[in-house]
Amino acid sequence: MNPVLLTLGDSLDKVFYSLDMWIFHFFGTIQNTFLTYVAKFFTTFGDETFVIPIIVLSVVLCFFKKTRKYGFSVLFAVIVGTLITNVVAKPMFLRIRPYNTLQENADYWSWYIGAGALSESDYSFPSGHTTSAFEIATALFICFKKDKKKIAYIFPAIALCTMGSRVYLMVHYPTDVIGGLIVGVISGICGFAIMKLVMISFEKTKAQKIDAGKLFDKLGDKKPVIGKTVLVIAILCIFCYAFIPSLSEGGEDVIRCAYAQEYDCYNAARVGEEDYPPIDGKNYCKIHWKQLSGETE
Image (cartoon, rainbow, N blue to C red; front, side, top):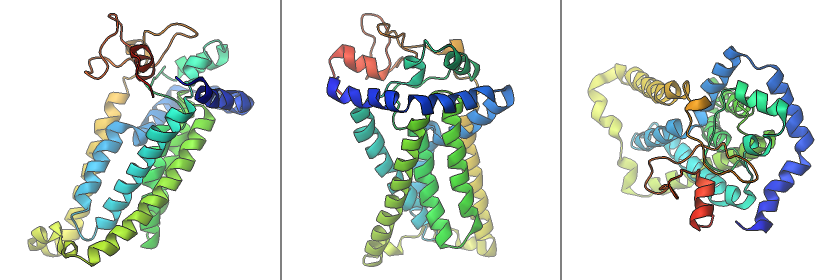
């Protein structure tokens, strides 16, 4: 890793240490079993096992004339957010997860264990879960707000809860989720803007005639109701698919990274993945596997 770039993550740790620890202390003091389950519930909205199927669903919505703008907005928002977060920001800041850098802080460590000792496998800044939640929420908020539908406000509310859940679970610094919020909002706005440009292009081509909804014209007046019902059921199924396994995540069942030098890495090891084979018989997280294998970020 480039030591110059690494100082960006270190600088965040030092400059915002007091703020981060104050917010950690707040969430740590309100910890209880019920709130931990609530946090796991909302953190699911930013998890890749939820977001990836939502991306697939958004692509499907693009084939229906009435839902095309929603599908394109979400799709482009996620693409922009992913590029900013995973391709630019995380490799630039190289910020280590708090459960690695704060292992000697007894208070933080008790809160981390108390919240379930969850772990990720990459860098910390910005929060990918928060980015995902806000990029989708922002894109949908703008779309529904333009349609003057009150449901628009539920999306940023869920995103805010997802943002808070990442700090409650002690897997992100508060400044990580603030960064994720900023990136997510920018990505959502960009996604909506790109959608508008694509829709204008659609109107100038034969592509505007594409409408899978015509296949269901025989349903008559029941078509809108059935369509909304199917959509809601699909989203609920996607959420359950992501949420139910998360209830048993964390704790002693996680196979942790074998890295143990300046700290004992508590990141989840990449086990059973062809792209991250064991090194000298040991499994490592994404970060340390790249270090030890000689690959660069």
